[in-house]
Image (cartoon, rainbow, N blue to C red; front, side, top):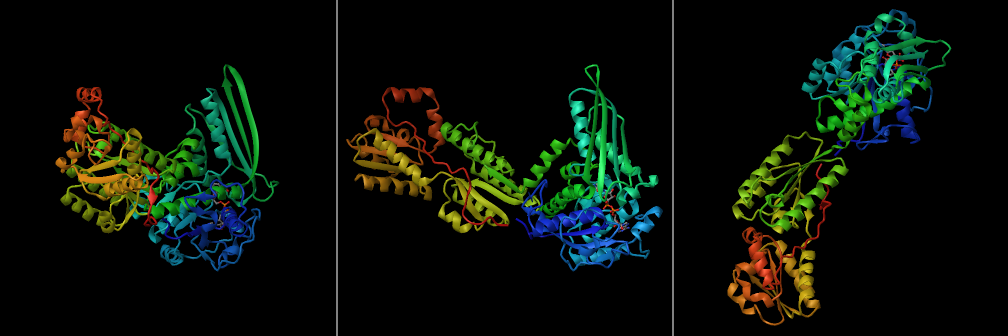
Length: 630
Ligand SMILES: NC(=O)c1ccc[n+]([C@@H]2O[C@H](COP(=O)([O-])OP(=O)(O)OC[C@H]3O[C@@H](n4cnc5c(N)ncnc54)[C@H](O)[C@@H]3O)[C@@H](O)[C@H]2O)c1
């Protein structure tokens, strides 16, 4: 279903986080051995599918350089895990705005030049970037809004990796939704960072009923992110984001104290040390928890961004816009909607795998309430259940639509198919759109209408259920893909075996009440088996009652009825008690009769052999006949 396998990414702010992300991608591209990632494959995309096509910075030591070189320029200091080959993509100059705090000027070496939105948009467009990652330093609200606007204008999805609020604000979410672009934000919740760890521990304390009295988290580091955060005026949103992620994961009111700007010049490179302290009351006594964790800060963020860009790509493929709620909740500290991490992970997993919309138009007779053919009904209910379970196992969205009618109303049924098509047509592109329908419309006019209807629904894969596809149907509906249903030959063989196992028969009368390809296949199978066993087969239509009656009661004659369960009753075969009959299919009129115990009992008391046999071999996995249309 993928339009192309590459994910074209642009980056604003080529600092440590960008460097870690790019190195991780190149490690996977070159050695394919990047260990410890959340998703090696995410919805069909690998980490190596990411391609960097544009980058913006203000630092004179980075601007104008190839990305592969710029990421190793100071003040970047993260660990090197990969050689990054020359990309032919040069870092463009962005506007400084509020990106560089006055105390950071010596570090970020900003080139002050007026750069317009149009210029950035033009570069993004030219690069064909699909996603723009925002890695501005903490406190860069203006610069972040600037890049968000550029993404909207250039038609890029947006991932806001830092704590200026974009995706968590409804008005921004709406702008992305209206522009048909997905976004994920705000502020990366690192792979195993202080936030996610502390959230989990606090959640545990809360779940186990302790009363949390103190919750303290402190982060200490020595990279530019930490040095930038020495200016407390830039920290308002960072505090808000970090605190919100903690308090939102417990049911009790807690005061969480977060120190996110601990600066320690002795910490080496891009390492971050985090301490978590919790004091609680558990069953009347004190519980104290203290822990220390050390991580390489930027790789911890890269491990999440690497998934976020792939989610954006999938959203673009599927035409989904606005904040991707489960991704925001799982990846970000301040999402539009906070969720418990396990739940967010579960929802995100469902979201990722939900690449298809399948609608099964089931027949009313398949439903339990159907008054005709209880066995038939049970059989198809089971078949549909299997199809649905199979789809769920593969995380596919599936819906069963049935006409709520008590009889075989083909007009009503056609309406259901029409409705299903409408529903599939409004489902965004990027989804596989499957329609599963029985071929049981027999009225020639309605069948013609159905064929015209199916011919008009381009991009929808059509599967049949119930029987093998009939030739006429196959030739007229170009997007027919496969079927799920009974093997008609097998049914013929089963019926033959059933009959032969009951009585010594030399002649087999096959009665069929309609003509269709399915019945033809069954008859062929019966004939084939009979030929092997040197038995004679005579085929009649149900309307040829007089002819059939001539054989009833004759020694060595057995009857198989096809497409007309209960023919024995219609034909008045009362005297046929010595003629073994096996029948299959559904005739709602007769079935209603049979459901009346009185008749059924009286027949069985008279030793009537022609009980109902329903044989069908199910191929519950859909069998594609050709490649699914993408
Ligand atoms: N684990 C993590 O490292 C982590 C987790 C969550 C959030 N974040 C956030 O991600 C952001 C980036 O972190 P980092 O460690 O890469 O920071 P960094 O200081 O290493 O990089 C910031 C980059 O942005 C550039 N820049 C500044 N103003 C700019 C502008 N107007 N236009 C273009 N570029 C500009 C700087 O020159 C620098 O290259 C920070 O806000 C940080 O708080 C980091």
